[in-house]
Length: 205
Image 1: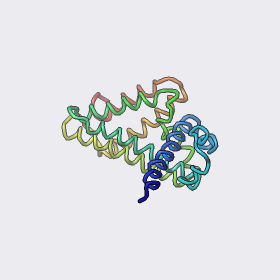
Image 2 (image 1 turned 120 degrees about the vertical axis):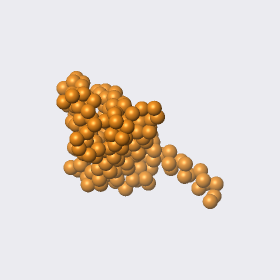
Image 3 (image 1 turned 45 degrees about the horizontal axis):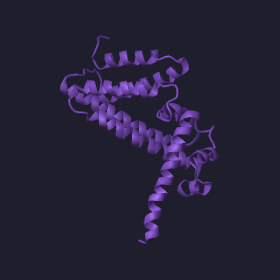
Image 4 (image 1 turned 90 degrees about the vertical axis):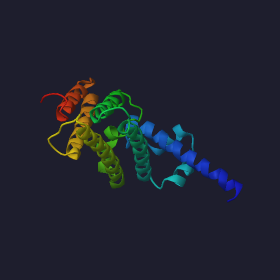
């Protein structure tokens, strides 16, 4: 490989990462349809040719952006799933405490793409819908792992399968995040936290 090729590969990766990070931030605030490529590229400081070098279309960019978002999100989630010295129930409640902290902000700066974009892009693009499904499946699988570990260590008591409870909890917290945006108060998170504790046997139903 020539010296020029060696230098080009990292530069290409940096440009692609810059475009993705800028798109995540801007679309996380404004939505997918409301943001044009020119705005993303202007914010990123890269020419249009660089965009089409990495992405064939806006939909392809959206798919890649969601993939990168979930890769980062699941990596952070794995730190909670494997956090030593905690019971399964403590790990689960820590995850939802982190959720509340990041999703509760009125301006979450691209950290809540599932809440922000799911309903919009699932109707616009099948590839983006599949990217969302793959990412949310990963979240639910990790929730199920925490719940299963809690059942094993005795900190969680459930009447259904770990997967079913994980799915119900994830759907509940997604709904709570939407309602927080509508109501501009965090009461829906309080309700979700109480219901979560009930579902895992931490408090009486």
